[in-house]
Amino acid sequence: MRFFGDRSTVFAGLARYGRPIQYAHEPEPLALWDVWTKIAADPIAFEPPSAGFALDWRTQSVWRQRGVGFTTLTHAAGISSTGDPTLDLRLPLDEPYFIPRHTVSAINHVKTKGGRVVAVGTTVVRALESATNADGSLRVGNGVAKGRIGRDTRMRTVDAILTGVHRRGESHFELLEAFVDDPVLAKISEAFIKHGYRPHEFGDSMLIERRAPQVSAKSPLPVVERRITASNSGD
Image (cartoon, rainbow, N blue to C red; front, side, top):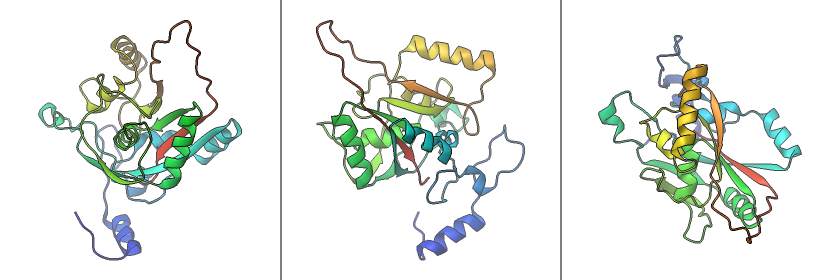
């Protein structure tokens, strides 16, 4: 899809005529600004990058006081489920992204210092891992995230994920298998049901750290100096 016109005209048209994806658990019709996160840059979301709903500027201020950095990228956030099992087998769709130079510099710096990267949302995980070179460094610029991330995926950049609640069988749930094993995910799913957590957009959130590799008794443990969080700011 290609839009004609200057930037301000296109955004004004989206704001005036755009309609967000509506969810059955939200009885009131959603307005376009309902799916824009508080920390978003360009107001262009029709499907919200829902992990970002957990963040605001006050949270970022507290992070800075604790030595946690924050940087952004732009990514076309896709849906995790259509509601049809057959169609869901085709998910996730290819998703374009743009990673600015300042974000790449910040993440590469943190990784060289032994710090950890926390991705805000599954789409951010896909973007960062797709843009990671064989040596573990990140590439600047545009790209397209393709394929699924799952239990057999070797994660090279992202160490933890802040994400919404996802159900088994969804591509976003499969992505979590790259972070923790099946017993842990089973406990998480049980807790969802027991305590009535809400999935998908406008639901609850969770933070999952990637399981650490096995380290021998003689190997020194890495010192974590700093964390940096990468968020989807534009979609």
